Length: 585
Image (tube, rainbow, N blue to C red; front, side, top):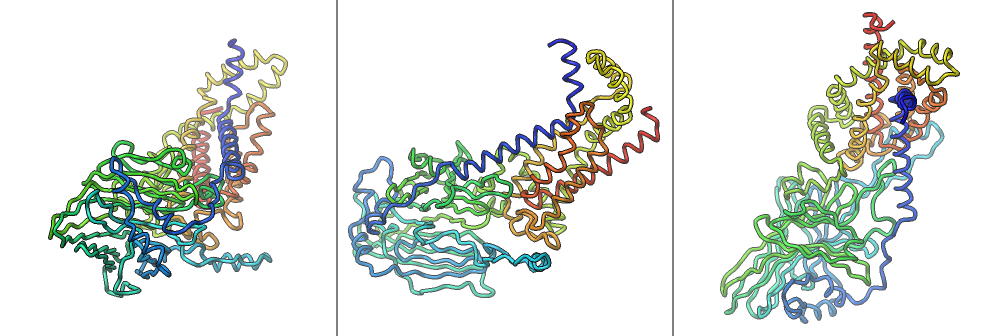
């Protein structure tokens, strides 16, 4: 490249160009995401449902290295299913959960999160909609349902025992249990609730399957106590698994602004740590791996369901695809356990099914908080979330927490933005002289560039001085996007007045319009590019970004408004200092 062309490229590069590149890249990414939603691969539709007994066989885990006879369900269990007139359920209600346990296998189904409605009503927004002649939106106040017995939204949590070859049959999720009560309720003043189910056979083997619920907790403890009153030892494994049908419409939930929330399987092992296994992966390849501890889960936007076996034992993780019904299994089984004659053993596992609240999930299982996925920018997203959470502990308002984080980020970048704004203020002071040079050497581009470079050197002005802070803002912006879109605490989190959900777009587009105004004011404080074509493009930026931000989460737009306002104040103060000190003529 000739010196002339090098100088020309350096001069024409303006820090605002990075905003243009960023906005173009963001637009391309959003278009790609929308294309995936509209035209990407869709999950297969379920085939006709066959008999329950036949399908239940396929759900059982296949133990590696053991014979088919050891893995097959007992014929008595299958016969019991085929002859059962209807599945009986036990209803449980705590302060945060309402669910059913099917006595067929002790399977957990129809689990509702009582503190998380599908939608929330907003009297302020309803009143404002009426003022402008709009009808209030229909609101679904029913609780979010995680496990579901409906075949179109099928999602259940199964558990049981697999007998080793030569041992007496043990109950699995095909076995009918007995319960003393049809319903259980956590009473006021009661901290925990235990729901026992029992099974026994004619050899003297008795299994008590107990589910324990705690007040305010989304964790369900499973205990399977095996009492062996027979004359022979019993050996086998405990398994726990999740079985579900993918959502019919799309494989993931859409975040505000067009990005997609992951919806599928996840496992955690010591080797691979957090690993996604989506439905396509389960169709193409069977998971077959072992690790100490770990967990297996199906996750969705804001919520997760995970079986967490004991952390001190070696667990084997597996997946299955039940092709005919397009159902998917992910789970684990334990090492072989032997119960001596006239002895007993207690096997345990924990099931978490609820919101993805990171501090809560950290206590349930190692790495379980990683189900809150901030993509490749997790290393930045987690500290931002921790800071938001800390500020919220004082303000008790997530909108104020966002404002507090904006101040902290601004303070952290203060030295860089200070240098950037000083450079731009100097550029603004020399702007009239640049225009004069442009008019004088309009017919001699090489001389014009030489004179401009000489002026920059003399006045100690760096035309790219504002680029670094802007580049650093881009990953912070993207991290906040994921934090606000993935963190369940922001779901339906109110700020003030009409902003009653920071995770979705502003219902009246007031914040995006304010953002556009602040961007226009900030643009007026920056030196205009020498290139007239580029100057015209940059003038369109406030309009373009306002259109983008119309569909972004209100919390993200709030961050950008506060950031712009602080930048305006900082930039005006620095410009005043430079003019006062006479640093530029």
